[in-house]
Length: 142
Image (cartoon, rainbow, N blue to C red; front, side):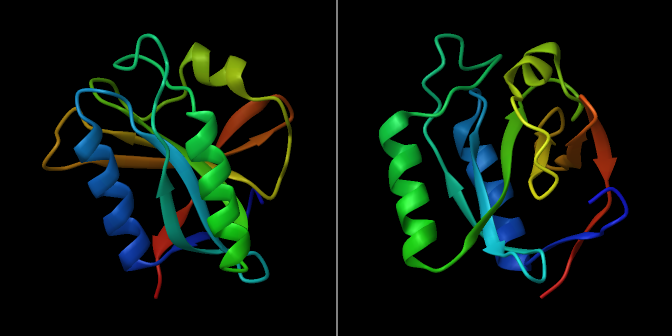
């Protein structure tokens, strides 16, 4: 996935940004789903953040995670990635982000949305390979 360009539809992009802004001042989190064969993200499912310190970290609400996964399967989509926001910091993986990754699944992307400037969110997508986050290129493509 290192050299692959990630694609997200305009509708999914808008939903991603909206779910992050709605969560402020907490970190937003959720999954990105779509068509695996073409690698296009077409849907975003926000998942409630139940971390004890939600303004600085995130943890998926188990019930929301199950519902989002079920909805993805019912829609015949694939899990393409995860996202979360950084309300007050740049879109760079934190130590907690590094510790939270448990796989080198090259098919999944990890998106971090910085809301330091809420009117101009900054997004960086990553792939996790060889034990570290690698920046990934992405584009809006309908």
